[in-house]
Length: 346
Image (spheres, rainbow, N blue to C red):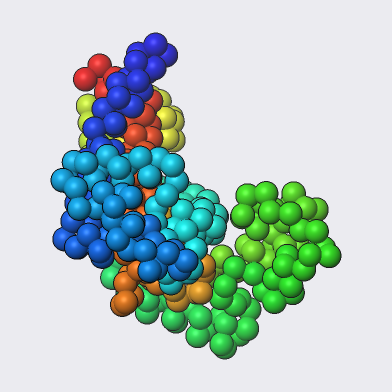
């Protein structure tokens, strides 16, 4: 365990320059604008007529490095600018929208990863048999389907046609209950699947889960195809290794050989995909959230990017996304070291 702890400490230290690089890149984007345009990052409706004061206060006409350190100081104090489209601080919008995307990621990621690993392993073990051909064909079709087309198709069938599921985060009854002050519904996490249980209202949880079914299906059909293909390819490579042949020659149970000796080593590339996938889902899947009217970070970013662009919102989202991906990469590296101890020695 000591080796793993030292590896984690080294990776955390190495993460610091990466985070600095991310902030430098994001801040550099603002330098294409004039000081008066960049003053919009800090201007609220009450200070629109005080552009010159804002420029002076934040030294927006100073050299790049001076502006960068002032900006970092503001970021560390929670000031990501003012979103004119939402008439709210950018940090407040990210905090309010993040639970929806995190909730969707918590439900979608296990479904995508576990089904992808299972189907990929199944296809590799039964190579060139019917189940392998079906798995590969399904993966190609799933990966080829445009996410917007699939989302619209699901809504047309299950919402417009059958009336089983509806877009949004909650149904009308649940929304009225949650927003009615007399019901004293407390927001603990911002995730209705959890808050429903904490408030003793499991029907709210079930309602929230039912509204995530179509978005999760839409995401799963496309993204799981990639994991299936990667898992199958890696599993076939591992099954051809000498130590697998030796294990079989010793008379070990075939299931034990596959599940204990082969699967763990085949999981390494899948861990990378899973980590980046989770970070992407937590940042918000733009097309999926727009189609299903799911008010998460993806919908927020898309709204800010639509002309006239809301620059503070776009930059705030970019900073949040960049930091999240750096942290996700750290988690992936730690998972690598846990699955393969040789990595700790590198």
